[in-house]
Length: 150
Image (cartoon, rainbow, N blue to C red):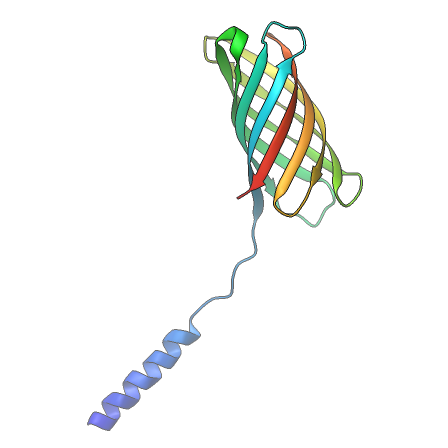
């Protein structure tokens, strides 16, 4: 009886270890970004922001992006809750050109269409970019973004 019980325990532990699954490949890449910029028409003043960029993993060279975030303008004493979508085109292995469009909702009321072309570089865990961002109803800015892979 003890031998049978030992045999059952041994076989069940072997099958339990055999059920471990292989690590699934990532379906998207994400990074946490911090932005610093300056308003080009001097109505917004200095700007700062935070966002999370999602890039679905693809075999294609062109990458689609989705970027929710928040941008604060100190002269306006308010900011925008932002949702943008766009594309990234690789120019070389490390440099890219990007373009995003979206909507921003001003914390003091109102909304704005956003157009945001940029250039940037990728390393293994960091992303640096410089972008022009136009908020149609309010201001425009030139901003530097540092993204850290999550």
